[in-house]
Image (cartoon, rainbow, N blue to C red):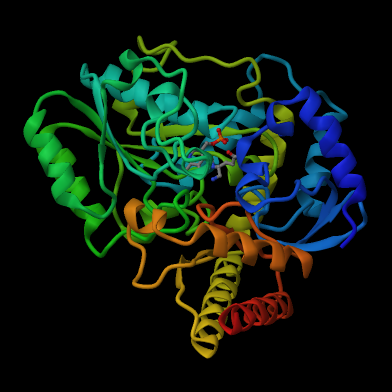
Length: 431
Ligand code: KE4
């Protein structure tokens, strides 16, 4: 595949942007080569500046659950743009968005719009600290919750990819109250609560960990977490920036039947525009300014252009429940295809997944947490990534990112991708 134009653009990009990208995970560092510069997208396809077409398994890291540029979303944005992009004032659309989420997710009684998942998490943690009067928080190794200082401790996603489990520039003072536990290990959480029985404001978790690849909670794990938080008076925060409105309309809270105290959102609720949100119990959200004393604000929070995109997408999901059956079936087809291909080739891999989220690790013996994920073979993943890219399958350029399937993908797309993966795995085994 030609990549001259992308390479020329990258040469320019690195002169004026750190690493040539506006988000580290887009860099091709861990997989080699230079990023493909995408010019357009429609449905399951993205097109790069050299005219190559790819089946897209990133979907902008989750927002494109309907596929790229769904006509209903684009039309809503265009119509709103003609009326005004942002007013910095209250609008009907924000009320409709808040009502839709509160009516759909029982544990969300009030919600605040922000502009990213990072902002949503940062604000949710501040609300938890304000509500409980406690300082410490528990997060999990390998979980990524955006780049707020307190979250960049043993984080996943790009932090994990770039081998910097703790980020430079985060003062000791900001990280000292962040405690880390091991995902799927309830004893590691119990130990922290035993050590700090009265100091922990919240436990924040990705209910399905999608930033160390894709790790599903063990049966009953989230429920035990819920019980521990209740016992010690800490709030349970589900970071549903990825799982929200993807696992189900009610997200992981509905899927697993476990009720968090606060939920954070991003990605899908913005329909491709910058949107995040945090919401939860009325008494907790009542501490947020101007109602309460926890300050949080944002110039473009709830802006009408972004709300119109998010509302359009959520309404399509709400009115077409069969979308979830379809994307979950496609996810299952993808995982089963990979497993069959690996078995046929005798390849040592682990395939994890749930619903429309999947991950392929070059490691046998299963992956149920951070340490397992880090043992996966980076070089094998890089070779797989480039083989698949060359055959028109666009995956995240990191072994710690999930595979996102949308409602625009077809069985034929999945089957083609599996054939390409089978070719790689067989060649790999032949050496
Ligand atoms: P943003 O600030 O990037 O909108 O959201 C941060 C965030 C919070 N919580 C979870 C569970 C997330 O997955 C994310 C962001 N996800 C990454 C993809 N693994 C975003 C991609 C990127 O950093 O460019």
